[in-house]
Image (cartoon, rainbow over all chains, first blue to last red; front, side, top):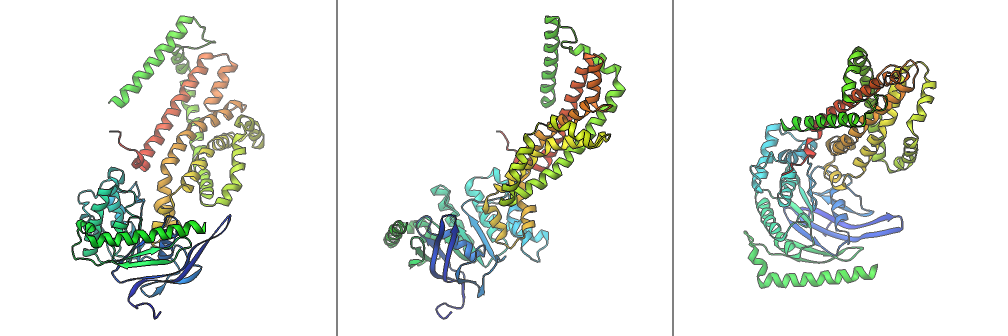
Length: 267
Length: 251
């Protein structure tokens, strides 16, 4: 443990994971170690199919690693726990529920002391924070893709999780909607600090949102490269076009190419 | 108002065309009864129509109810367990492939004299298959993310079923139930027609046949159609209440 700061909220320690498929063993993650400090936000990028989604399942406790350990707030993860919030590329809203009832779903499962009025207020507060005020009673089918993803983010945060796991939440959105949601993420982080991990394929997204970007190598994956991203208090989209950002993007791009060619070789 | 008037006009036009067809061809009523023959035939036996209509209706509904229970149960088993799906599916398909008309005499012999039970059994056997299949497909095609959202919060399997799997399967379930309603009527009538000393609209149809009362036979067909329409729309109303969210506005 000496390698890791005690206050790190997410600690992944020498994790190895192998899937058993019909054609044999498929090693996905090999000796991966990384950590995210409290209220930190780390983006994870890497070649397609390198094991990023497996990583989210290991952190949320949906999967157990074959070797190594995962700690959340100092506790070893062996089963799913209610202190985690998740959002996926597919917003998976329940179509038979109104938006506000969708956002309140985790409060029906996670033990809490809120009464029904307080639950509603909590959901409303989050919805207005992401710009969905007035859409509380709408059904998901009445909302655009970007709005559905906003609601999905609210659902992931409504029970004040210690850890937010985002698995390509903006991957299916058009470029402008995606940029809107990046701003929404910054607002959420300011108002509702959380420790987060973001899986993404978008390098600009990774440096705009995260404090640290981790590049994973090709499958079986481990940490190949990482870079700290200095953050201003009010990040602006223009900053992505500064020479500093462009240099960072170039070096990340280079790392991805290395990881991709490595994955090709391992096939 | 339009929702009622349009189908009503369609029915009236249908009856007029039918009357015209019979009149133009000068068919005798043993070849094809016309709508104007049917009303007197109904009026003559109106007591029997209501009594037997009720018999047919309640047997169909009970058979359908059992079909829903068994169908949902089988569908749940097959939807949740891949091994059990592989085990049960061929048996189910084979059972469904047997024409139920051939099962009727077997059941009639198996439970001799228990006319109500026999009829309900056939109605059940003929109608549970679409329900079982639709529920199993609905459950097995549930996107894994839906499950993960709840599972990552520590929800139990039964909670996931009640909160997500069940409501998500309802549109498929009601689609199958609409098919099952008409099938169940077929089942009820098969047994009622074949059973000696039977009761129900099927028996009335059979007595029309033995007495060469052809307008009566046609009147029974119309009565069956009316019962079928009625029960179908009961299912539509239930669907609107429980799965109305699946309907998208058309504009």
